[in-house]
Amino acid sequence: MSPSPQRPVRFLILTGTLLLALLGSGLYGLFVERDAPSDRDWDANRKNLPDISVLEQRIEADLFGVEAPSSEGMGADIYQVVDSEAMAAKLSGLTKHVTTLRVPTEAELEAYYNKHGPRYRDTSRFSFQHVVYTTARHGGQADLVAKKALALEVKAGDQTALAPRYFSVNSSKVDRLFGNGFADKLFEMVKGGNLPCWAGPITSRHGAHLVCIDNAILGTVPDLAQVRSEVINDWRFSVVADAKP
Picture: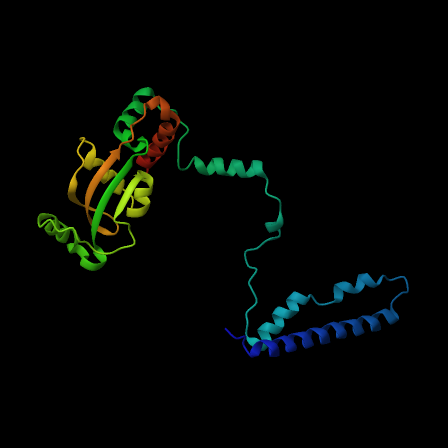
C-alpha cells in the first residue's frame, strides 16, 4: 500500500508549527529574563514552555479534525505500585461471593461424588473413522440424512477440515476437534465392551456423524480420596450456585 500523499504535508505543517511555538516561547523567555534578577536559574522558566505532546494534539485537532484521546477516568494512582497483600485481600473478598469456605461433611461429599463422579474420569483414547453430514449443507436435516445413509450403507459424507480417521486421540483433543461432549458420546457407544462399526449418528458442532470405532482405551474413575481437594472445591461452588435465587 503506497503512503498517503497527505502525510508529508501534515508532517511539514506539524514540524513548522512546533518550531514556531518553541521559538516564540524562547524569545518570550529572553524578554522575561532581561528584566528578571540575575540569580534566576534558566531551568526555572522551563515551566512556561508548552508541552510538546499537548501542542501536537491541539494542532491535530485544529488542522485535521483529529480528536485528542480522552483521559477521563484516569487518575494519578494509575502509576502506583500494586500492593500484593491488598490485592490478595480484595480477591479473597470477591471469592467469598462465588464460593463458600465451609467444609462439607463426609456424607455430603460422598453424595456429590456419587452423582458427579464421571466428570473426574481419567483421559480416554479412541481410534475411529467417521463421515459427517454437515449442518452447513443439510441444516436441521443433517441427522435424518445421516440415518438414511446408514440404512443404505452409504459411507460418503461431506468434506470438512476434519480428518476421516483418527488414531489413539485422547478425549480432550476429541472435544477440541468436534466440540464439547463428543468424547462422551463415543464413550457411551463403547462402554459396554462393543466397538460399533458403523453406527450413529452422533452429533457435533459440525453436523451428524456415522462412526466406526477401531479401538478404545477408557479412562477409569478415580477413588474419591485421589481427587478429594478438587471435589471439595466443586462442591463449594455448587452450594453457592444452588443458593442463588
